[in-house]
Amino acid sequence: MTTAEKTPLTTAPSGDHSGTFIGGAWLDRATSFPSVDPATGETFGHISASEVADVDRAVASARAAARTWARTSPSERGAILGRWAGLVFQNMHRLAALEARDVGKPLSGGLLNVQIAGSILQFTAGGADKMTGATLPTRSPDYFGFTRREPHGVCAIVLPWNVPAVLCAANLAPALAAGNAVVLKPSEVAPLVIHALVELAEEAGLPAGVLNVLTGVGVELGATLVSHPGIDHISFVGSVATGRLVMQAAAQNLTPIKVELGGKSPNVVFEDADLDVAVPAIVRSITENAGQNCNAGSRLLVQACVADEVRARVVAAMSEIRIGAWHEDLDMGPLVNPVQHERVSGLVTGALGDGVELVLGGERPAGRDEGNFLAPTVLSVTDRNAPIVGQEIFGPVLTVETFTDDADALDLANGTDFGLLACIWTNDVSRALRMSSEIGAGQISVNQFSDAGVIGMPFNMAKQSGFSAGNGYRALYEFSREKAVAVKLLG
Image (cartoon, rainbow, N blue to C red; front, top):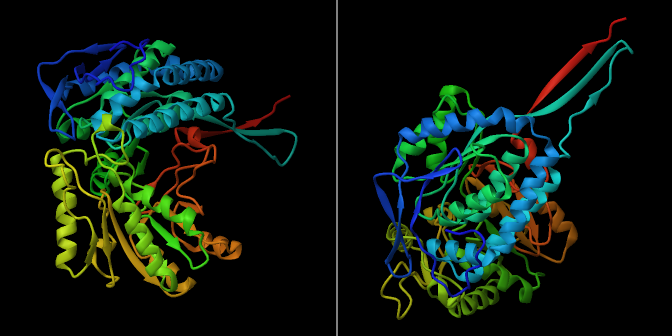
């Protein structure tokens, strides 16, 4: 892969690459796994797989580089990240094609994700030399107390496949800016854009050994990494079940950890909502990336007096969603692989068996007999205890429930184990502020989906969605520790 060339939007990216980057070099290995197009099932390349023994090598490489990198001035670290951001923007069409084909999302979705990744790098670069400690009051002039921020040392970062460019930037940028060396493990399902981003980091001047990459199939590689005694901090993004296992592994070495897990995010629509604004956003929130986002708006909670109109408008809009392969650049792509297709389809079938009403979709779209396509699906739920209400589906499946008043809406919104994002649609400012304080979620959006338009907004979460503030204005603080210093002045 070259880093200077801009690939046109219509060019299919190659999937041939090494998955192991240690000490500034890509290393070939004996075994490989395929890169598969989710829209066709076609293998378009192979990636040589990291070996379990590479974990020791990668950690040793990071440890050897960590001390020098930590002593590099924050301004220089920020300058490297700034150059990296510039290279991402210069190469964003090629990077977008890599992510889009690997994950299966429309090309425009890949382009948006790469733009966000570049913006995160740019934002973090500007903050690298602005992370400070505190000067503390003392009982007399004979004492002086202060705190300082220091990097953890070697960070393990384990990422999923759904939005690889964004999650890579959101975790790597603050970890590196804070002075840590990193061992990064992307998902083997869609690692290509991350590999390309790493090459651009090297081109930007990141020293050898500061960033190392392991990409392989199976649980042993990741399990060995997060349980390695040479790891000083872990950042994990993935499922709740795997997150629990990672936390158990971290506990054995008392390794500090941050986790970003699942979601079951509601769009709460009140009778005074502007439906011309709300409905398109609600549809995008569950069809973007085929619903394969932790913050997908997978629950629609509607005040009963406007429920029929809202449901009809949402169903009509979702019926118009155009579905196709990455290069067709339509509204929605397939699910990422057959396993995910089978899982999501099975959850829909199970919900129907529980008495949930199928309003739209639930099957392959017409003319898409190959690949992992599933039509946008709407389920009407009357039983608030139906399992589908609390399950993270991770697909283009929207459940619809009704509520009577504000208190009822609050009960519904808080009725799952997750607490990632809640979106409130109302023109009543008092109601919006009251709901935002009482809903148990790390992020609240009012009259929009997610945090569009806000720079430095933290990606906070609560309950079983995890604990993290990635991509936020204080992200560097998550990847550093505070040291307290007390001095008795002599003489």
